[in-house]
Length: 231
Image (cartoon, rainbow, N blue to C red; front, side, top):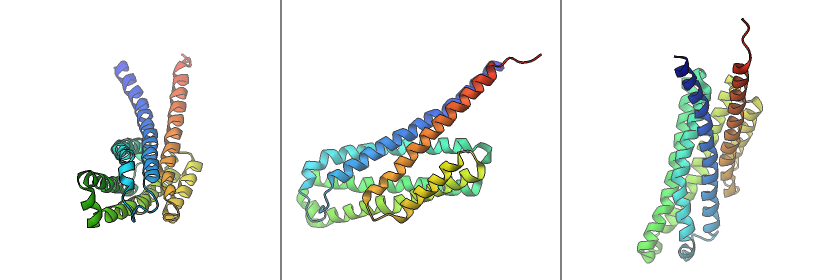
């Protein structure tokens, strides 16, 4: 019985650490994909399509990274929820899941639009550019990613910041930094496309913080277990 209990405790301590690593993986994969996209698509992309032939490989690589980044983000959501434990509230959980899933869905939709451009261009370049689908898909992808997905990301961060302030499961300063970065995403959309990288940078910061807190909790528990018990 004692061995079974010890096994459960160890498994609970390892789960957040694995999920936090997935959050770091999301930050790396998504940031890499976004940098590839921004460097591949020129400023005058709506006026000419000849750049597609040169940048198709980079864009294809970026599109292949997005699904894995999304899977990693789901794991990140899991560890954030795990830290709440019994303090989870139905109202805030609904906002947490809703904004997180909408962000992920909009990101996938934006990637699918660019992926569609690549498929059509490979099959018939002339049909793609002459039909107007090319320009429409680029505009839709850009709006989905830089406007709608980022505002959902800002909402996601705002909800988590509020939960952390109310429950105290994360350091208070981290909650206020989350509020500040969420405001950047909600207000500064449209000034520069690079503001999108604020969200994966925040996920990276939170994941590292969770890793540190988990390690410290594990270390404190090990020290406590090693202390002699008074008869």
